[in-house]
Image 1 (cartoon, each protein chain N blue to C red):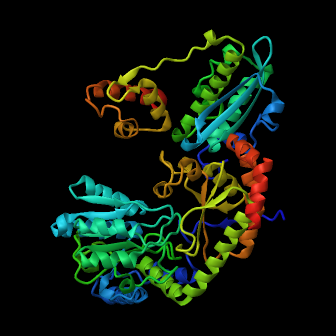
Image 2 (image 1 turned 120 degrees about the horizontal axis):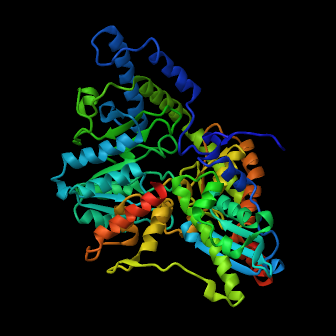
Image 3 (image 1 turned 30 degrees about the horizontal axis):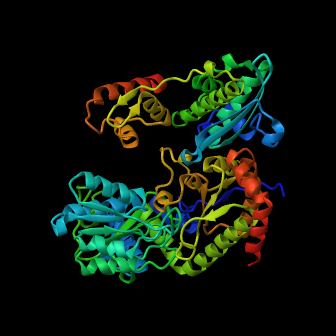
Length: 410
Length: 205
């Protein structure tokens, strides 16, 4: 009962490197140190392995190897896709760029930056379920757009956008479509032709590869202006000597991910659903944020009413449990989560939101451990909250208790 | 404790957060306070409610509180409660002299983005004392600082600028986004910027 564990439920932030990934990388940190651009055997050996890695990533996406560009991660992929496309295609439909209000900052801030630098931009609203409205997408595209970027799965609430539908509408109107698939790649099927996208970002460290590596898929025929000018690496689109160990690690993680995707997704969903079920059953006044079905299988975002997220995060951390919160107090900025705000959730409920994101190494014991501590922590923080007094009195009022019992019986 | 385990908070903040002093554990009715005060707003992420008991010599001999907020909001209220009630309790005129900086000093400092939590602790104390003074028919003793309008177009006061600085606003552009100051005729901009810098220097200089 008093056993002490370390439980990591923050896999949407980052994941541990898989032992087999590390194993695959080690030679490229040791004896295989050649520069892939070199003509000699040291370089050739590494160059061939990078080519294989590119084939592995391409195959996972249903793309051609020549359409894969290795980058330093999700943020660079998003920057390269959006700025690179905007600069190379500013004459297309006036260079207008459309994105959604719940994008990762690596997309949203790029679009805002371009907006301040002469590009027409539009940011789409989302509904309470964190999904964009296809009617609004159509209306935005009808106005003439060069590029639309809408994320596949949201990092905070897990909501999965109708990317294929948006891409089809974009194509009909001569606009290019980019999607940030960092949170869906290796969790659900991500195939560029099924989605119909022109560009797609992915990241290594969200899929049990190391930090500092990612990739951008760019459909053949799409022109990008590079962010990094220099050598002819990555066919001139991304200058800089390749992160060889990272790329090898990314390819290994993709291999493992493709082989185990269904099993991994099923396990993640089971654990996530079990955690959600127990939180709702064992803790009163809890709200699940985001779409319940159209959701990445590992993500759970919940609000605990009357309490503030940072206080919960610190208490959970002291119990060895790692999660994240949408509260302003832990963001380092003045505002709470932009995603939950865009969904129209009242600020006081955003401040009490926690995100649990499940990963491969989590077990049922981890859920048991969380549920041994979470109800106690929520109760203790609520006990010193003036809001809880109000809520709590409502719980015990006879009329409401009777009404609640009637609802519960239904 | 290292930074690693304290979230950038001092050991004292963490101690008061994990073991808060003087929390109201009974019902409000049962406590029968001489005064009640409430400040903050759940929308902004922190709200504090404070109850005091005062004897016939105007000495606050007991103070209880409840706080919705982060670790530093909870720690700040807890420390404020200790400062007011230690050594037999403070006279109300002494308690009114407590400043956010005094609470912060006793906490061993707060991260700059959290300074507004100590401001709220101080405001909560003022609010509860004012309630007590009203209940005892001494409204005349309430000296609420008057705010001066800096931006006439949008009705922004010096107090609002000070509060935004304490909330953690570090540049004039953000101040404008939040208060709309100097976005009308723009005439007040030089004085508004100077005032903003004065408050920045006062709290973060």
